[in-house]
View 1 (cartoon, one colour):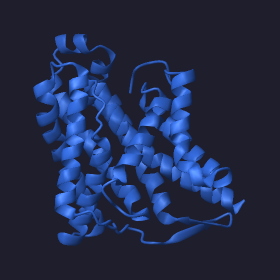
View 2: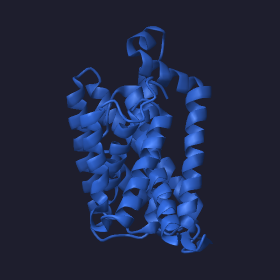
View 3: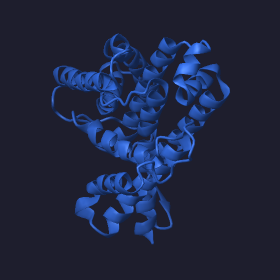
Length: 290
């Protein structure tokens, strides 16, 4: 029983991080139609910036995290200006290639700036654990789940209750009509790139204290989050969150009980099955909306 509780808690926490990463995909895709393949390297950069602000700059843990997330918003705007705005009228594949180029540039900058040695990021709760039903669960995992839940609720509020959210929803529903009715697509795109990068940073900062940060830190998260987004159907915020939680629980529970040496392959298997059997997503909520 204690093993099941521990694996379930780990799966929920991992799914929560995947949800934050996948929502970064979703926000950008809905606003611009772009799938940003630099997203994984933005996760990595966000974690490295948090390491830098809390160690080199000497900021306290939480303010250092917030500073890193704010800086990532500026990075998102810079990517929009360089890799998206000049190519706005070009075919989507050209923009995808530009995001791949941005990923290579970001990774190169990190390598020159921080080197290739893994870094560690201190967590606000340290290594403390709580005991639930006999299982020792790291407080960091509980923090991850709580912060991710707050982030999801905040996004729901933004997209349901604010003018910016209504503009993004209008673009997602009918881009041409949204432009004709006065939606300022350039400002919406800049905001979407900034918000997506900040979500990537938040995900990296949340999970980094559980391990080490290296140049490949965000790549696996990006691939798994993309699988979660496909599972959710890219149709709604709720569908993507559910898809992420399903992926997280499958990886941790099946990996813990069935094939622990192959746990990392389960998201890819699920992705292939979903694409083959139900390309619109198992959890698609049938409407293209946030």
